[in-house]
Length: 136
Image 1 (tube, rainbow, N blue to C red):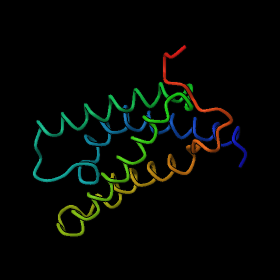
Image 2 (cartoon, rainbow, N blue to C red):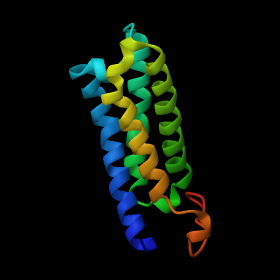
Image 3 (cartoon, helix red, strand yellow):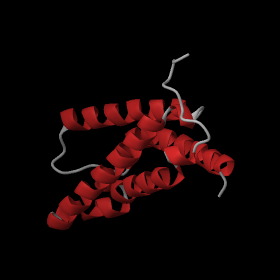
């Protein structure tokens, strides 16, 4: 896939990720908690994690406008999704009461992490290195 097509695909992936995080997480944790929340239910933790994901989702949506200027955020989103999903997978294997998460948040995070990692161009693939946001 050439760089232009890859960046267009990355923009779509970022839009879907941003919407999933900023809209999907708050909704799915309420309508399908077995596959999107962990026991025991802790309202303080739930508010915190939803707040973090909504915030990240908004910034991912902003990054979709110009992915090459937001590579650090995109790589953070990819790696943190893979790590979060991986840790949750191990915990769900150990704790049978959390196995429903294998059809909810675990695959969602792993798919997001893999998609962003595959679509995000490496520095050596870029014609010129991107400048820091706001730099002249």
